Length: 392
Image (cartoon, rainbow, N blue to C red; front, side):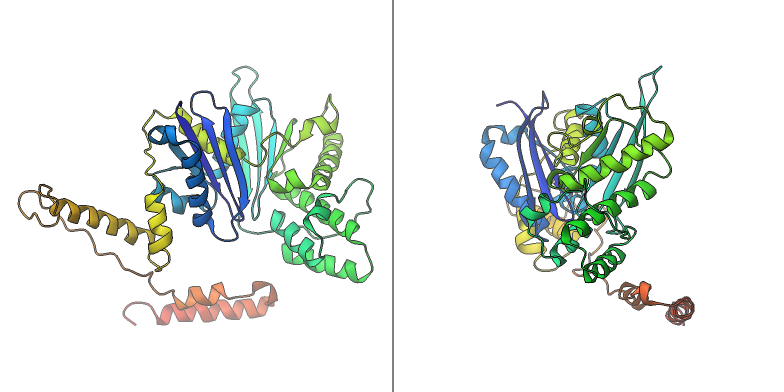
């Protein structure tokens, strides 16, 4: 079997895994699954399945990883970590070079990338924006409101936008959106109109904030689970983008359904982009370590509450001990010329206690404060910091 490349997208709510032919880029295997807060465990399970399905390529496998949880897992796997906006852009450039814009909605983030190509040189520049700090305008809002309204997943996928009455719903914040939906529900607004209004709010929020005043350029690719499973949301994008294009004089030669669409493999673009970066590197540039270190982290290190650095250092010490007692290694038991010049710093087994000010801020409900309360709180926190400064 020819060399394969593996990509993992470890997101806030799901893990996506792909296997492609390293030479041709052909997609050989893909899987998408909610991790239910078990990111590392599901990643390990999927890698076990990949190793079982592609055993002949075991020694020639490369791995690249992306997503909000990818940076933590990458060192345990010997994987190349790729920032997710970069990964999505790489996948689009490789698989849809004519695309003008990309909108990706995740479980708790949203991305917009606009490609501008120089007709003279053929080179493209990217205007990218990402919201990963607030659930407003992301799939989390859809999940939470659908659950509150007790809408079954199959019913949610069948809910329409076209021809449905839309009511004002705040898209800036998930809490505000939920409050508006609660008020509309008490007025007797049906669930179909409530969800169409949420679709409208999510689209409006991202168009007004993430575009940063820029205009999406055709063709527009809609990526991520919400777009794959919710055609009503896709129709909301088509309606609102089409209206903006009319206002701004953007001429589109084709039907909106053709130029604003969900492409094939729309769930996997970040994972495919991470793989693409791996394919462009020389063979062996990043060596996949197998599932052993990650399994050790999941079954021992993380369950014991140990930081990843401690687990890694323990692994190094174990290797040195095995070398010392293996009959010829220059391990810990060898204190001659082979001894290290400088001892490694002792790592703490547990994270340092959180500063009281940080803990106070973490538990703070900012939206419940009046301006005067906020100012008084800032003064109080400043006093706490001053009193706990070294030498006081």
